[in-house]
Length: 315
Image (cartoon, rainbow, N blue to C red; front, side, top):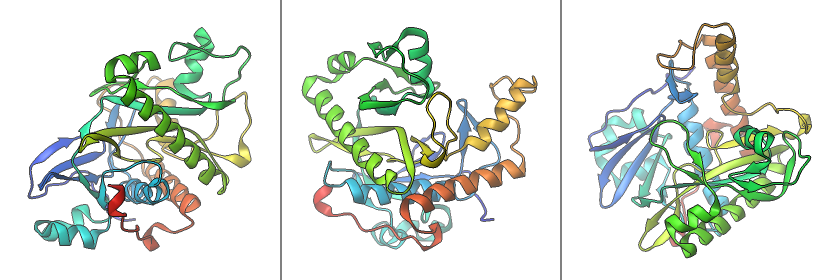
């Protein structure tokens, strides 16, 4: 198994170190987003990291950006390691830390709202509906079941939290915070992106249950930033086993969640730091989940995949 990358140290100022990404200022109003193999669950970063995870997140984002570039401009300059090394030659000596897991992007001012689109009633949306009959404070029809398809899909924004869980807000609140023009644009763009992602995924036998997008302002306009339609930002279900009225198996870090939930039921962990060490079988099963969703969506093995160079007119 490939040696995982838990943390990076590159010869540039570190802008931020999140749960997964290390972000560097590489000059000329550009950032390098390095997706490490760190993994979190229940808002706790776990150990050990998951081999290949960062590569999957980066390369699947690049794959999707090629397929939605007609819908919105985005921040990607390149996810190709050779091209990044050419544009930022100071990275050459540390290539083993960042290659294939990094995106060179235009710096943008992050818009502080998560643009969530839900096509199925699951997760926190199902919990809110079960308790109140609403989603983000908005009334939904009576009689819906867990994992029911929502038609049309629902735009369900949330505030971005530095720590802990994001908090759902109404679209009206989003309009008050961002202004009507920006909020309406982000809603319409997010719904278009979800629709494209749902249709593409359906062709491969995958249901895109929900996802979240992030946007930033660049040159006076909103652009799509961060990861896009990855197993960390989306809920993917195998269509062959879908059945409304129950929870669905997810093509993501489900083996990690299942293991930790088992420990919680046994009273061996209370979902607060420090987190227990993940056993090798759980780590290996999680790597396989990430590789499987990449393979199913793209039709390519990760090692054989090479991201297309973005069209400069879309950035």
